[in-house]
Image 1: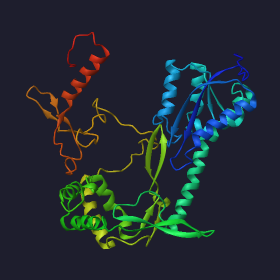
Image 2: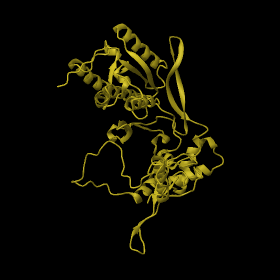
Image 3: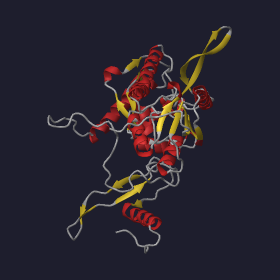
Image 4: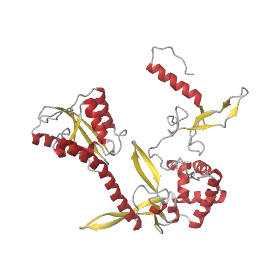
Length: 414
């Protein structure tokens, strides 16, 4: 059994990691964390040699890949660019709030000889039995703290919704936020916000419902109709079919708020959106001034249900089917560049479309696959180019081969 110990009296080489979760927080939080680390080093009489500081601002600790400072620090350590013994943080929550925290800390120590120590525990030895017990508590606290905060925020938002106060986020299209003030110690401050019709966009939203009811058009055709209208400001364009669909389904436009329809979480460093059971929804009638009548909304919904019925696939669940699905998002990729190509005109991720399988004269089953900009059909983008999947795949592979093996003869992949 290995008997290693951490002696803080040794002049260890160290780096600092500082993080602020939200841009609404104290802007000087990273500087305060750094100052607290320095004070703890001085108070304990340690001789740590801090060579570099890494920081992330306005990024959640539940994410890893999106934290540029964290990723830079990990790359420097793994590549050997930075030779360090310690990562100093104010509290372990600043390092991260992920469930993988224990394995990350263990991997840093076992593979690179780097320990993560926190100022709030006076940089206690994480290798001792007491330190391992503390690390277990810290790791659980880091992830559970986020869950408890989310519960408290959800409770507060639910109360706001019941009181007919806007629970947070940007105002939906067609509405604007109006601040309601209150006096506190002789000074006026914002108490809450309510939704009021926005004169610049409400009429557009009303025209979408009227057009949908009169014509029975689908969301793609409605989005194209809006993008082609000259009376709509260019700043409001382009309209997408997905956005139009969400607006037509929203009960808010006839005055009823349906809140807590979805829940979110971070799984495998990816934000996952799941639909809540209908018993958890919060419905608030007369939440705001309606933009359309409920009768018109229901008429549009009836037309949309007819469209859905034509495309619906049976949802009968077999008794032998798997009942617990993985929470991590993912997809089966039949094509190498799926999700990696972007439109050169509007920057939207291009989607793959394929023809039906046909039989060649030789008896082979074939189909034609190409990438297209999804905004083109809705009139939100002028890029009508269809990029053959086989061609772009060969070009990309050839470029990668040339960069990885510049000395090899240039040839297209087959």
